Amino acid sequence: MVKNMNRRLIRLAEVIHKTGICRASIYKEMAEKRFSKDIKLTS
Image (cartoon, rainbow, N blue to C red; front, side, top):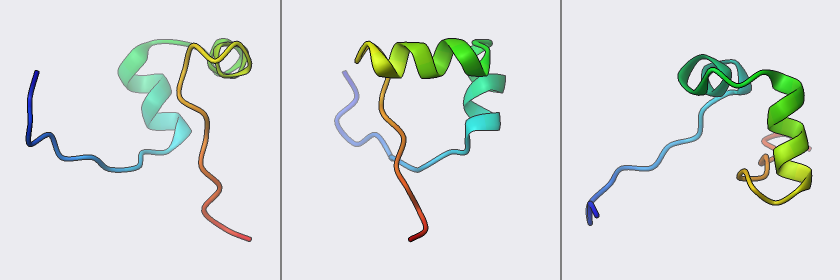
């Protein structure tokens, strides 16, 4: 395990590109708590 892993926020489009998972599947897995939930950036 990497101890000094840099963390950053990425947009949904980048998540889709990096994982190859479609938007609907990402939201389904978020609802099932098998995928990190989204973070609201604006009010």
